[in-house]
Amino acid sequence: MEIVIEKKYFDDSWNFENANTKRLTHCFHSYPAMMIPQVAARIIETYGKNAKLLFDPYCGTGTSLVEANIRNIDAVGTDLNPLARLIAKAKTTPIEIKKLNIFLKEFNDFIFSLQFSGKKDYSVILPKFHNIDYWFTKDVQIKLTILKEYIDNIEDESIKRFFYVAFSETVRDSSLTRNGEFKLYRISEKKLNNFTPDVYGIMVNKLIRNKTGLMEFVQEKKNNSSTHIHSFNTVFGIPENIVSKDSVDIILTSPPYGDSRTTVAYGQFSRLANQWLGFSEASKIDNKLMGGKRNITIKKFGISILDDIIEKIEHKDKNRAKDVYSFYYDYLSSINNISKVVKKSGYACFVVGNRRVKGFTLPTDEITVEIFRKNGFEHIETIIRKIPNKRMPLKNSPTNKVGEKDTTMNYEYIVVMQKI
Ligand SMILES: C[S@@+](CC[C@H](N)C(=O)[O-])C[C@H]1O[C@@H](n2cnc3c(N)ncnc32)[C@H](O)[C@@H]1O
Image (cartoon, rainbow, N blue to C red; front, side, top):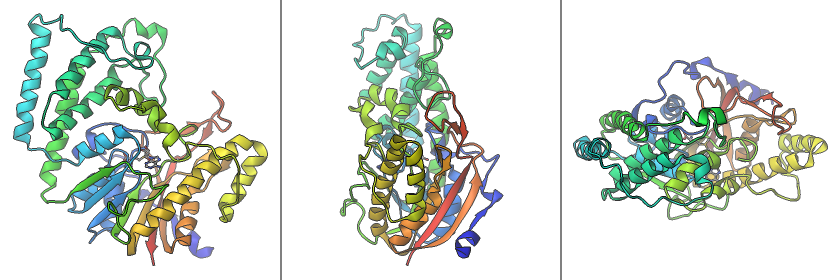
């Protein structure tokens, strides 16, 4: 027990308070609970010096993959959210800037022709999806449809992806959703009437910003490292032909903090963009993510810190206990599978948050240590850092009732395990 405490410590040098987290392609697209590149970089430099292969089993928009790539490390990522995969792929795909400039020029000319040559009666067939009129004004729907059609016709896959990523953020910024929220809330009635976003202007600005990030990435990635992004669910297994047993030098990831219903709703955050991009089942993503399906019967995991806390929550609220149990049930299966692909002496680095439920803190960092231990790993260290700039709610409702607040995750825990 003493050893565990010695190995877990606060270290403010990991806070990176004023760091620019949007360098390189990290500027491409916002996403909830992103890992900051400085943390990914330092972990790779400490534990992945000679690594050839990095795996991120919940890669989101691919922060760890980008940082691996610029250090000449091949990377594999998986995520169940199609929008996250699209962004991660775009962020790790170098594009020749000369070529990009040609497409950007063509696009600018197209926008110019729309705005200034009277071509305003452009006829479009608007997409149909649930609640489209609730989230987008007619004018915005028409403009987004024009943009989407334009991008659909780009033949070069890398360029098309680059444009889709900017389009996705344009969808968000021109929708009637409130800014700065993870979940979908509509802006107030009062603001509705004055809401006339410059859809084309937003898109152009995103493209310009992302081009700058891409140029930095291309400059820094002077190597042939590759990235592959997939959609398999590590809870159910890892396809041997994609990531084989004992092949990974370093796992670097930030897993979800809990089920999407009660923590960060990745699916909901991405839903409108996913719908515009034509990803079917966009509204069902949250149910597929870890803990998305509630287990009916709570059983013991055989990990006392986890079993005890679930029992305490169960005394207060049976359903919340089931949510928590369901999440860790999936988390445990996922780690059991992940453990098998790590090489002997390879590392698993998990950046986790300890959330509170019903007034109890769930020590996910220690639970992670225990699960990996059961899979033949040794605990190297747990670094505790403050979260100054991560996009996530710092407060949540302990009872899951609107209005009630409780502090959650002001810190994150970097858990480092090594396979023995
Ligand atoms: C904390 S986010 C990762 C953020 C990422 N590090 C970044 O910087 O963008 C967790 C991700 O896990 C994904 N996820 C949740 N359950 C999953 C599962 N069973 N398999 C794969 N991905 C999953 C979510 O879609 C989400 O993108």
